Length: 388
Image (cartoon, rainbow, N blue to C red; front, top):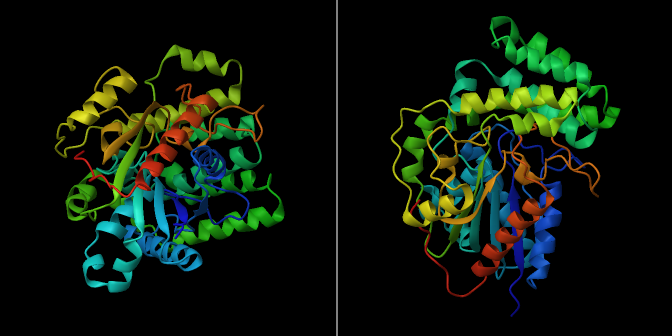
């Protein structure tokens, strides 16, 4: 019997998979499908329509629904491979390793079909950025970031005036006045004016869903993950691996790459603001990486990243889980294809210019590495997950 292969792509925090043609994994899906086909694998690839800011438990339930749909569509012989970006990787961990799996026969039947889990830039040990946003009522700012990202990926670069306004908002220290929804809502409405009425309505509906449940933000703090992580025990027989990202520290080359594009220069300042807050030292203990990770990090970066190294959203050391798949100089969104290559088809736009110089060749290599890892998971000889 031919075993059908299904890949489920799980968006991260503020993921907008449910905005119609505005696809979170638009670039990834094509790159991964091509890479799998090159290995002789014909896989069905679909994106999970998860809750953008709902709790990990709520998001895991939506992943379970997507898993059930995949198995129902292709039969009980289906082999499923889950790829989660950012907090999407935690959704997979909660689904597969949470306590409900042992007592729910139907869930056990479904999760038995999972062969591979790949996490990409996932905060397995949390991120200080979540702590900052949680303590500073940062949901308004996150809503603005999300709409700005949608604008860049669907419309094009932010208008200079709005890019400068966003940079100025952060440069002001995000004080009490900036926390007001009035400030961010005004900028959001100006961005929405560039979308078609239909898409603007879809984005407003998305933002409304965000308002309903914002539990995820607190769950992504280092303190919360220090408590949750050890309770998530992956089932035997599932191959687990991770793609690791790290942005370069502020350097003159990044500014030179941006040239005289004032909008990109302003957005680079936004990235540096995020990077600085993600670099905050956590009080949670840092255990040393396993030897395979030490070797992989040394090959990718030339050193062992310290606690402050990050991709602008997630500390690099927080991303280690399972086996190394790829270790790249890239920011948090680069690995989704959101880097500057507007002349390509389809075009790539960079809404957070980081100066990491991750481009199309590296993007294709990353997803070829993911495809190769999935291909190994199709083997009848599963490999136990490594210690991270």
